[in-house]
Image (cartoon, rainbow, N blue to C red; front, side, top):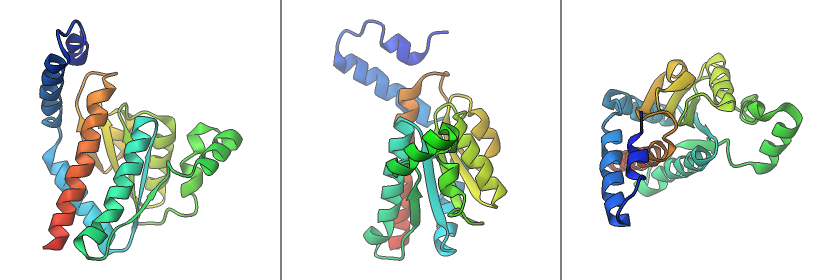
Length: 203
């Protein structure tokens, strides 16, 4: 079955036509997110802040950049709201460590090796993966659960393994392989959540 993006990409008459169709479809994708889970994620972040726990982020490719972006945005909430902020750490940003771990232990260990001694009971792990099946984020999720942490999965398609493992799941439902709208929606969720938390803490 042809995906909506594939249909849009068939023979668009103009960029304006393609943009209109893409943005309309992206809005539909955003409508598939479980709003109860969205509220639960905000509550989990606020609880971590209150308990002075660290919020870790991990992802691959485009999701790695979203992990870095989300980590930075959440770290800025305290400064913007002029209150005590969130403790955040992106596991995607230490290139030397990632390449060393990947070279010595395999790509599936690039996140778990960083978490081994720094991830503590009660900490949060936000894993971002369109498929929900990337080996290194699945391994990171397993380790976080073993260590008594809370896992938030931002996924697409059918949710994959992460959709079944995480405590809280923000799933953007799309056909398998349709990465663009999922990654777009994940970045929008970053901005929605962090802007909301800034406004809430200012109050």
